[in-house]
Image (tube, rainbow, N blue to C red; front, side, top):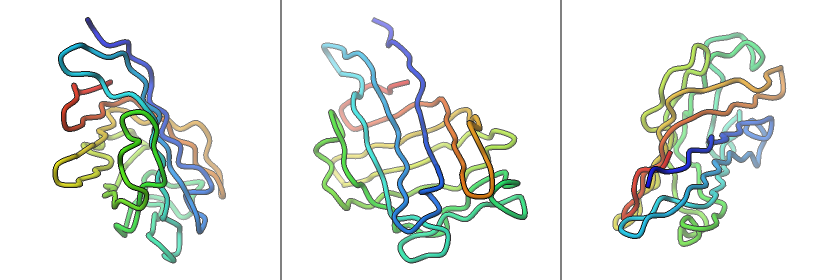
Length: 155
């Protein structure tokens, strides 16, 4: 059975650049009897623009409104919670985010990785789209594949 492909929302909004910022990836797929597709949502937090936790700095422009990418300069991003197949990932688990270029869209392979030894999840984004962008708000979404230990790659 081929997976029903739904788009992945990756929201990096104004809160991304605030003290308690979050990013969220929503993944919903049908399962398979042998190796299921990943189903659920996961939320991250801990990056901000000036480093109280981690840091996510706009790149390629003189401000957020003219930025063409994001430099995740610190690895202090953590899991805030998850549902479905992500529910077993403990709160506060470390997440590695890799820098991105969204204008022009450049693949992020991977965008993020959660590696807990026996369990690993990662998201690779093939294409980014800008929903909205100004001096205080950046809304990105994209298409890609999430991979996880014991699961089929899920679009």
